[in-house]
Amino acid sequence: MKSYLLSPDKLLTFVKELSRDWSLFFPTFEEGKTHLVRFDENSPFQPGFDRIRTAENIKQFFFPVRGTVAKFPKDEAIPVEKRYLLGVKNCDLKGIDIYDRVFMGWDPVDPLYKARRDKTIIISADCPEPEDSCFCNLLGLNPYGDAVSDLNFTKVGSGLLFEAFTKRGEAIINAYKSLFVEAKEEDEKDRKAAREKAVKKLSSINSKPFKKDLPDRVAAADRERIRDARDECVECHACLHSCPTCYCFLLGDYKRGKDIERVRLWDACYYAAYARVGGGANPRSRIDERFWNRFQCKFDFFSKYEKVYACSGCGRCLLGCSSKIDIREILWNV
Amino acid sequence: MERMNPYYPIPVKIKKITPETSNITTFVLEGKPIEFEAGQFAELTIPGVGEAPFTPSSSPYDKDLEFTIMKVGRVTDGLFKLKEGDLVGVRGPFGKPYPLEHFKGKEVFIVGGGVGFAPLRSLFLALLHDLKSYKKIYIRYGARTPQDIVYKHLIPEWQKIDRVDLLLTVDVGDGSWRGRVGVVTVILDKIPVDVKTSPTIVCGPPLMMKFSTQKLIEAGFRHENIYLSMEKNMSCGLGKCNHCRVGKFYVCKDGPVLTWQDVKDIEEPFL
Image 1 (cartoon, one colour):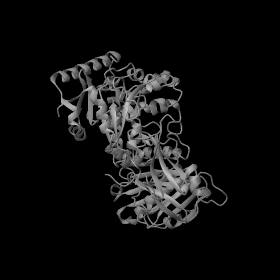
Image 2 (cartoon, one colour; image 1 turned 120 degrees about the vertical axis):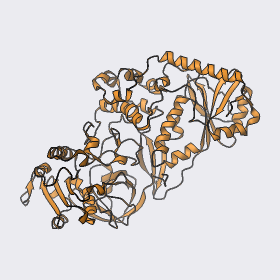
Image 3 (tube, chains in turn red, purple; image 1 turned 60 degrees about the horizontal axis):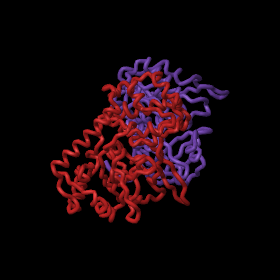
Image 4 (spheres, helix red, strand yellow; image 1 turned 90 degrees about the horizontal axis):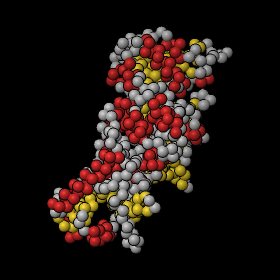
């Protein structure tokens, strides 16, 4: 499909049109961080598309921190909101890609996850200014959207340049065609230049690649070599809970009068009881075992199982870490 | 394959509760909420308490579903407070069954420890259902004391069956015990089967699994013929929550029974 240009003065109209039937979330820059907020016609619309991904990770929209998955003894359908997510960056799209594999690719399909995916239209945005914490390039990713989203846009000189990746994306362009104009060659050149600039910046931030046999190195790692990093870990779990690709969860049951509500809670493999069984045996009772399990899961297990790393290089883990452990340093040295 | 809500447990009443030992009880559920094959497991919901994985102890061909369960933690504490007629929930079946087709025409050597005999009973009953297809069934079962032996009333009946060879041992005897004394590995010193072709199936507590497996390897069983029940923390049973992952396996999906060939490179696979 061709690319289409939306001039800056038409953005608000476009967003208002979209939000007529569905909720819409857009990124806004506040107090030094970008956050995804709900669009409300009566509140100011100050989108922040130029910065890196939002502080919070996108998985909460498909996989809430604490979400009902069943009721007992009588099950009830769980309502799912229809919504647009605007301005999502590629590192979060890759997180969604990992989730899609686990919850829709692997049998059985998780019906609630699928319903949330089906009822969410993602309009991603290029990431023009990667920051020091970004390292998607080390994982073979680019700082601009791709097929995981329905539509993607790039900020160019004359506006926002959109391209559709799915039929739903094409349908949006077609439905609001009066707001768009067909892109000119100059717009596409602008896009190419903006992307090259971002890629170049990423290369200067992370000039040293990971070794090609990273999965095998992680599998066979001498744990003594990671001791410094492991010893600094205070088990705050920020790295895991902020990670857009971590998908561990725990089911919990809560009494609601005579009925039971079954909820799915985010879990994290650094918790000491994570793998402990009822009888008390625990395959990862020590923190060094749990610390390295995270690396094995993301870079050995997942890459061999699915041929992709369960890491998108978003950098939230190193910014969130209480001890400022930089995952890149560990992976460079493994 | 897309199916109904995989997190929803089917409600079912407890039909009968039979204590086996001071801390092990058999719970018979009314009707059969799920069909399963020997080796597969289910998640049992105790309303308001939570859910835990158990392998049925009944035959897949029985009209009821039975679980023999040891009281060890929060969920089982909740279960042991329930009475006949109370409601529980069942999800499943999960995991892969024992490959009974591969066992046919062979001697089947079963090794159990403690409450680990529960899932093995389901396998044993499935084998009995089609006994003529197997050369002979050997069971070696160890419990801590004579009081800790499960299925006490059934064992003498099983021992009478032609082509079934069942030996018992206890770690510590008492005044009334006339049988063997010693951990289960003492009855693995003599293995009367063709180790080159026979499958052996092991289920029990971690240390028993470790030492029994060692003995079976030393005896010459082929690594791919040593079937081990892997007890892991499992929340979803669907291969998604990640709790039970061991190396490249999701025990809930690829197991719960894996072979020694599968797990031998994993550090401490029985923990």
